[in-house]
Image (tube, rainbow, N blue to C red):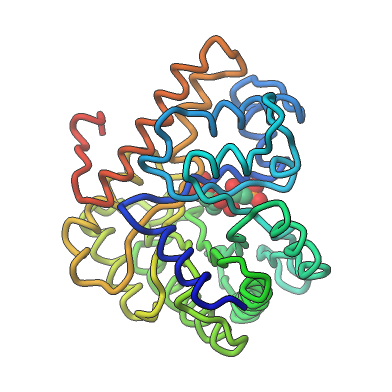
Length: 340
Ligand code: 5MM
């Protein structure tokens, strides 16, 4: 394990107020998002769309790293180069989603366990050869009647830790993603309890699996009320409870917390990140960053709609959202101008 290289890469990924662009939707997820917009759901269209996204002029002003999917990292761009080369050429660090998806967990109705550990050492070595510098794994925790169970949280935390250890062994920075879903009518306080328990378990398992915390990035959910909870808290409340929750559970050695957007609107995701940075940036030991898929891509995907004559307008929208989130890292996001 090249310890100092891992630490340097992790720090670079959260430096200069930049964050991650997640374009690692699995094929089924990408198909669903394209279907909603009437975009053809085939490999060629996914390729054309992602080529348009990574070619956005000025993207590296706000984006430090891009998370690719297995299909994408293997594709050649129309100029003959790879997506990895296109990103590296503009100063964006390429990474790869390495889990193989969250599947129904045996004996745990309504809960999921993420798969992908079998053969992972070999796959990681291949991704390193292709030029990836970090690897991402997502675990899904659902809030509902009598769930999440301890068994589900523990199994997912252990899988995250085992993937993280293998990633560091291969020289890849693990982007550790435990996501407590927004689905449901639970309160902000309940989400806080579940998120804290999950994070404590994840860090316990990372310790047991001898993962070097200085060389990882945490990619968690923000602490939010469920989508159908009657009480939707203010941006400031969400920011304060999220930071309080993480302060109790995330060790100071971790260089960065890069939130996922999880189905929030693009504007709310930026506003909540902004509120955290305005008030707490100087009080917390880690960078408060972003690793958004929907909250960066959704407007651009809608404008593009499968038609290349919309490329420039779609790239403008993507550039704008990426910049909004860089501004949010600085506590300079202007929700009024952005139309929130
Ligand atoms: C939670 O999803 C991650 C962040 O995306 P959002 O900001 O839209 O919440 C995302 O990186 C996710 O892990 C990938 O899109 C892969 O997800 P699937 O469900 O396609 O495996």
